[in-house]
Length: 108
Image (cartoon, rainbow, N blue to C red; front, top):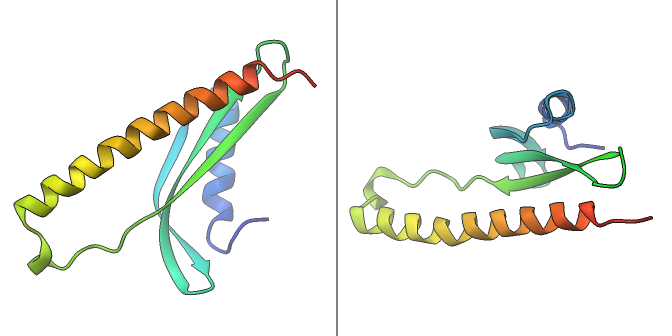
């Protein structure tokens, strides 16, 4: 079950990931939530177990921050934001590696 506005993009991303065995990222997808419409990004990551032919897919969702007003943008705020995103990207990569490793070692 998926939120309103997500089904078509999610299904397309899952199909592409399944057919091409690649990660698929969609950005700026508008969904309906309890608070109203909001934008999200998501990524579908295929995982293949080493000892099984079964494929698994991880779907990672990310809220898109509301764009700042032009008055609030400055060079220092852009630099600070960029430095904050770097640790998140590293953490995302680390978690992806851990999940792939766990899936590869999964023995039901």
